[in-house]
Image (cartoon, rainbow, N blue to C red; front, side, top):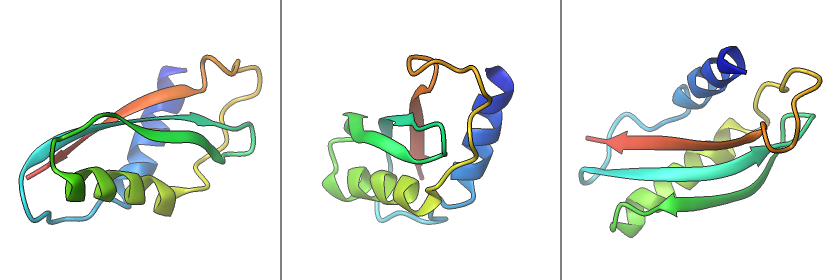
Length: 87
């Protein structure tokens, strides 16, 4: 599972914008489907800046579909929270 988490984070990082209008940290939560789709995508912890929250969600939408999780991962194991740090 750790290996998949690393693969997932690296994949998503490729879609993150290089610049942001302000600084902040957003935590986004979602579930990966067995085929690599995203379900339940939402801001779990807001930055307090709407544009950053929208940028984090848009990054994940652009990254979809994500790499398929390994067979045998339960739905609970396919739930993720990814922090985005904008500088």
